[in-house]
Image (cartoon, rainbow, N blue to C red; front, side):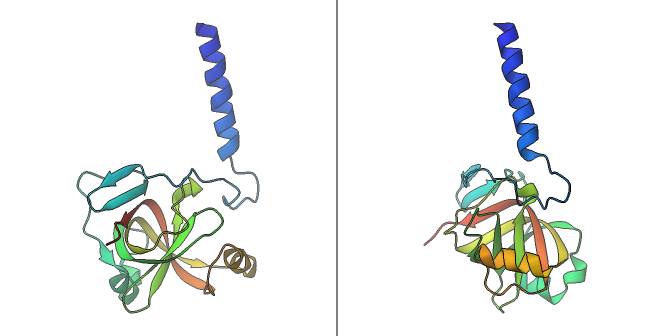
Length: 168
């Protein structure tokens, strides 16, 4: 029985390592994100990705981020806005938009999870901001996944967690 458990453990570990290993030249998009199932359900809404920290930082609005992006680049923080687009293929990215029309494209960290494809409304994203320059191929890929006219240069948030607010 002990040997059977060991064999099953080795096989599952190998399968998981293979499933999430990036080959040469892969973008990470080849990975299949975990189903869009919340890891936490709290009074404010559903959390996807990693559970929230016990003491969550106060969120920075997308409008404040857009006003001073250099102040936020490379620093982990919480960002708030409204979900206006979601990847229709795998739920592996979303667009978080501010009241003034500015936005950041949010990628689910390591392509390890997805959010519901019909997600919309208020959200708080916990992650790190960077500036992303898209190639023509990346822009075409985003459009194929449901993006509306992605810009060649965008702010991007690598999200460890996404809190999608309750409707109503």
